Image 1 (tube, rainbow, N blue to C red):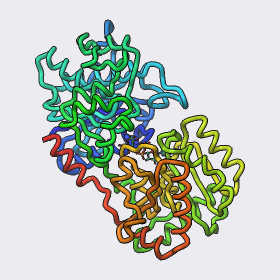
Image 2: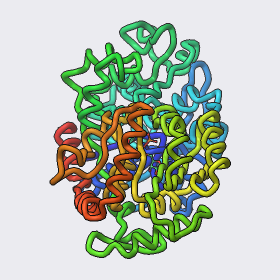
Image 3: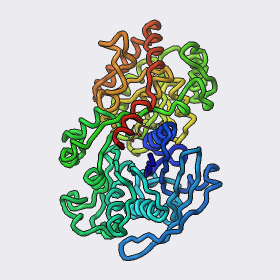
Image 4: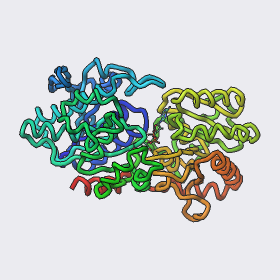
Length: 477
Ligand code: ADP
Ligand code: GLC
């Protein structure tokens, strides 16, 4: 099949979270299955400057209609591997910036214009290059208007640009809601401004557009597909989702074993596999030493890698300061985000310099070292559409401590109740739940035989893309 993806992130060119990994590994897996795949990405500075893009050629310089003006854009393309073409929608005013969505706490103020422009750039390129896709697969709110813009362009020009459209919700908490006055930039018919269109409490919701107007809607785990139909997890869009329940499917993300595999991981100081964990011990020592801790430390090491947000339950960890003060454990956190949470962790690390470390860089190598060098991976999310780190930690032989939500439910079996096939510790998303998880982890760590067998089972769990790709192929069909 000829499959076009459009997304605002793609590993390794632009990544703020799991979206980048998921789009890269899904598209890679589709290429492995013999499909012809193109991925559209905004031409951010980091992509244009990437060595892979050094050979990029300009294939179009379209004039994009944005309301009552036409804006010029440039479409560059390169091919990182056979079967995969990346198209960059460039316009320096919008994308020649360091970040994807904003700096620190603040989103860029023109994100609505940036991503309307991006979606229109995709449509124009598909039209002018006569791409004739079987499917266009859109990811998250940044591409939410694409199915509508595509059908509108088809009607206007009498072409068929893509047979079918798919919209995947990676996180319904981010909806791309903007003042309705920006709607005119879409050049879509006015009737779409209403409740049956993209209107959401008087504003323009890009995610609602994707949910209502794609032929099929997917999300990244079966459990999250159920959850987003409830008021508790639907973030106000549960009613809209309910209208598409027949067309909604939850397909669990896989992980890219070429990037996340302790036996081949070049980012680690030492490689290892389930047969020989000596390398994991060296990674642990290196991790401790890098953060100024004694590399001989004998107690449990807890790792955490995430955006510092309430989604990830960082406040639930902070509520357990006393635990870290009293117990002989280490906690190493890699992440940045919410200023209050970041400050809370900074204070904790400053008051417990011997035990807690915080690294706020964006550091891909450190994220691999934490997965490999920790004994437990802490992920107390309040909601988690899929979550990748709990899968990465399992294949790295690091026991995940996760809450009973979303994709975490679909990927981690609790050791309690599943002594023969459990691979992790499942808790409730509360401060008490986190404390219970930390205590269970201490007890498990003290029982070397039980810890070791859980670790080996975790490492053997299959988290590849085979199943999800088959699911997407069926959906495309
Ligand atoms: P989400 O997409 O909600 O942020 P996921 O678990 O799906 O959560 O994916 C998060 C991804 O982002 C993982 O690959 C994780 O390692 C990575 N990540 C988060 N923060 C950092 C950071 N500061 N440095 C490097 N990688 C990070
Ligand atoms: C989102 C979700 C995360 C998921 C990722 C990739 O960022 O928060 O749970 O793993 O997308 O689908």
